Each structure stands twice: as C-alpha cells, then as structure tokens.
Image (tube, rainbow, N blue to C red; front, side):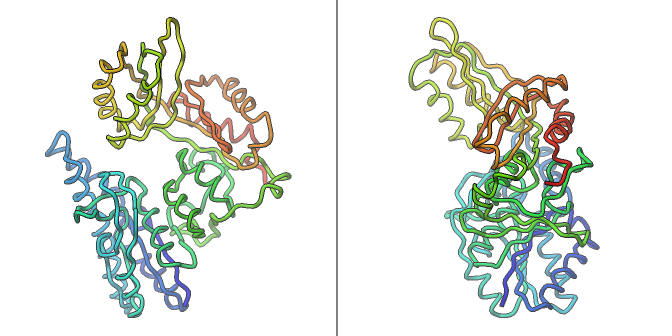
Length: 408
C-alpha cells in the first residue's frame, strides 16, 4: 500500500475550520487507498504568542523550559486534527515527538535529529490508523523535550518519510509551491514545477520557504518532497534529484532569488594577526549554539586585523556575551555591531561553470543605489549583505535583471 507523509504549516491549521478542512483532505487520500502520516505545526501564531508569554514571566527564559513550553503548540493542533478525523469516521491517533520516536541532541531551540525509532508509527499504521504527529519537537536521551528551530516541522516530516520509506513527503502551506522569488514582493515571480535538492537547499538557506535541514535530509535519503497549497487545488513544486550537469547547458542559469531579513553584523576590531585567533573567537560561539554565516577578515597595518561575521539578529545578545569574554584572551581592541542588515542571493546550479554572474549581480545592485556590505559565495549561490530597508528593492531588481519572469 502506498505511504505518504503530509505536513501542514501553521496557516493551514490556524483555526478549527481549517483543521476540519485538512482532515477532509487527509480523508480523501486515505479513501484512495493510501496510508497517511501527517505532521502538523502549531496553530497560526501560537509559537510567537508562547514566546511572548515566556518573556512576560522571565527576562531570559531557561532554554529547557522554553522548549517544553513551545512544544505544546504542536500538541494542540495534532490532537485537534486527530479528533476531527475521528469525527469523520476515520481511526486516527495523535503522537507527540517523543511517542513518534524522534530522538535529538541537547541543543535546546535548535536541536538536530540523530535518529527516528518508527516502531510506534508502524504499529499504528498496521492497525489501519491515520497517524498525526506533532512537528518541531523531539526527545533527548535524558528524556528532555527539545524543539528543532523555526520551520522544524518540515524536518520532522522529511525525517519520518525517510524512516518509514514513504513514497514521498508532501508539504502543504499557504503558497502554491516554490517560486523564482517571494511572490509577495515580486508579483511576476514564476512557480517552479520542479527543482533539484542542491538548488533548493541554497534557496532555503538563504531565506526561502522550506527549512534547510529538511532539504538536507531529503537529499541524503532521496525523499521526493512535494510543496503545494493547502487552500488552492493547483500543481505544486517537486523537489527531487536534479538533472545531470550536461542537461543544464541550455537552461536558465539562475533559478531563483532568495532573501533573509533580521541579520546582524558583528565586527571584532584590532585583532592580532596570528594563528589560532579565529579558532579562539568562533569556538565559543559554536559551543553556545550560535550559527555564524558570512565571515570576512581584513588584514590591516602592523599585523592587526578586523574580523566581521553575521548572525541572526535574535542571537546578537548571546553572541556579544561570548565575544566579550574572548576579547581579553585574544587581545582584541573592541567589538561593534550593526543589527539592521539583510541578505539577498541569486541561486542556480547552472551558474558554476559560467563566468559573469557575480559582476552582473553587483552591477544591478549598484545601478539601483544599493551598497554591498559583505559578499559570500558557494558553487551555486552568490549572496550580498545589504541594508535591510533595501532588501525588497534588491529582490525585485535582481529578479528583473536576470529575466526570471520569463519562461525558460
């Protein structure tokens, strides 16, 4: 029997009527003869509301306790969905991340899945049940609840699809698929009918809709991921193994434009230019669970240097706390921050062997009066750190400049 994993985002289960509509959708799939495991996010803005509530009772909520609190949002939506399915005559059961066998490390707020014990889910499926799993959460070896970070329900769904050897993972959301740019910013953006894991990972890492770790898992375990709308019956986007390099020769080289807001730049000034300094600076950040993106080191006079790097704006207080501890150890002069930045990226697997894309990107931004603070690249991505107030304009200019509104 065919097995599919569905995932529904917060907007898809935002209220009781939407939960009932999702239940009807799942019921139709079950009636077609397929087994269905469904992963759900918390209802609407529940997670944001819980974070605000935590900060009303604690200036700096304990990470462990915050994860326990945030995990309750998905428990509400998954139990309500199971109730709705039962009311329609389907045998359904809701499971927490712990009951679903999702095991993680101990990085609260950004835990990573290290294994899935799918025995309980398999047992329920063998009994003919529809299984509804709370996304975004797991359990440590010490039986502590963890959360996977914003968008983590995507990763829950793909991890379960891999563990269950599902035919594919279907992600339903408030957009019809993956676009060449955010259609809320660029109305002319085109929906992509398919995209390779590599390109999608770069788009997701640069701010596109999907959780990057879900794409990593999909690529490793070859899980096809289908992204479509919960609310509109229209074709979506299939994320799967991309075409071979020789098939890319005649295709549009840039696949899409991605952006990410709420980025902060931290600059450590007057750093002695000697071996081991970078390790001394970045190791404490890693141990604190702070993800660092762009890193630039400028060699100055008299063997002194400045080191700049970017983090998510929400990580600035903790990052500064760690850097301040290191300053006297490495002999640096000071640390300064700029919290008002964003990134804009062009992504395309066909770019890597064709020159001129970086210069074209820089020219488009320059002609639009947009200054570039930092630049980072990979084989299929070029990203520029710019002022956040200009990021929407940059997305529109690059989408137009690379002619992504045209059909390939």
